[in-house]
Amino acid sequence: MNIEQQYMQKVRKQRIQWFVFIVVLLALTVWAAIGTNFNLFVLFSGLSEGFSFLFHDLLPPSPATLPSLLDAALDTICMSFVAMILGSIIAAVIAMFTAVTTTPFPRLRYFFRAATALLRNIPVLIWALILVSGFGLGNLVGTLSLLIVSIGMLVRCFAEALEEIDRGQLEALKATGASHLQMITSAVLPQFMPSFIGWSLFNLEINIRASTIVGMVGGGGLGFMIQSGIKLFQYKQVSMAIILVIVIVLATEWLTGRVRERLI
Amino acid sequence: MGKLKLYFSACLVVFVLCLLQLQFDYSKLWSGLFKLGNTISLMLPPDASQWQYVLSAAIESVQVAIIGTVLAIVCSFFLSFLAASNITPHPALSWAIRGICSLLRSIPTLIWVLIFIVAVGLGPLPGVLAIMIGAIGSLIKVFAQSIEEVDEGVIEALRATGSSWLGIVIQGVLPCALTALLAWCVMRFEGDLAESTILGTVGAGGIGYELSHAMRGYRYDQALFVGIVIFVMVFSVELVANRLKLKMAKRL
Image (cartoon, rainbow over all chains, first blue to last red):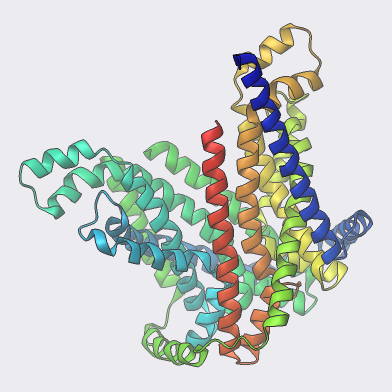
């Protein structure tokens, strides 16, 4: 078989793979559309109803509600920040145990991996629902559930970063007879610092978004104001709160971007 | 190192200020842990007796995620070519699309759901719409990024041959960016499935409703079962997605 034929065969195989992929995707979509009674007519009527509600009932926001919302907005920011700081410190320690390059007990790695996968794969809202049963409503629940999910996410990212560090430096230090702790402080930490800061800033952005969600099931902050505002038909207050959410999210993105530029 | 020290000390100051603002009741921390332990003991063993309802709700969540993501992919696919700065027909158009996207993106999906529930009523529809809107916001951003990473030489070469805009997109940009776009779609579906499982807790359909229903009725054992199902759903999609991503990386 000459090269041309081989090439044509490969192209044909790729085409068949693509075809199967697209057919499966289409079949899944149709199955899902039938299951949820969904069609394009429903889509457009739903969207138009949604946006007419948005522009007629929600907008314009009432600035009079702003003072009462500012405290909740500040809570939202503080919850995310506290969860980010505590989360990145705890996660950095756990990540040291999970990464192949730095773990002092290689056998325990899988235990830590599995435990943090559990933290990460249960959505933050569900953590909040569970924690509410223990700690009651309020900021504490919001902060704790953000903390749990932050740890879950950051351990994965930190461990990946730790596994990418240059092993040559570790080996060199080991050869001089450095202890495990000395190796971590003088070889691992300096290399790890940029990704530590980068990922924890990214975590802050995620926390800010998540904190408005957590509030809806009793975690305090802006989410709580939005949820209760909708229940009480205070739509002008809701739109004001949503605008605050947008401002906070965009401001955080801007700020973390600036910090990243300066530090990394 | 001076910059780092400044950053960390600023973090510490803000951290303390935040704790002052939040005014936690630290005594609650311990009593809460005991109460939580109590709740957890009520959760065991998980009660699977309602499995038919949970299963059908889980399927509904998956379906909502699929439709929302597919619709978003279709919309973002076309719009992202207009938004990518290297091939956009007009810079103002690119700027406008990006602005709208970051607005859509900065409102969490759960808030979109609340809005759509009030507008169109309960059921799977508000979930689909909310996921679609949220996914469009983030997909256009990452699609446009991938398109902008396409080698400028490819575009210029096609432009030099007198190719039309559509020609450049189909012959030059698409083949280069396709794998990256697919990878983003897989990642988005992962996120959307996780989101669709919780939409029910605020009143849209799906498995989240079963969860908040069980929690409100203090049936913690049933709630744990639903929680396990959610974990299995999200985790298995993460596994499949990781495998797909590896496969795609090999292709490159």
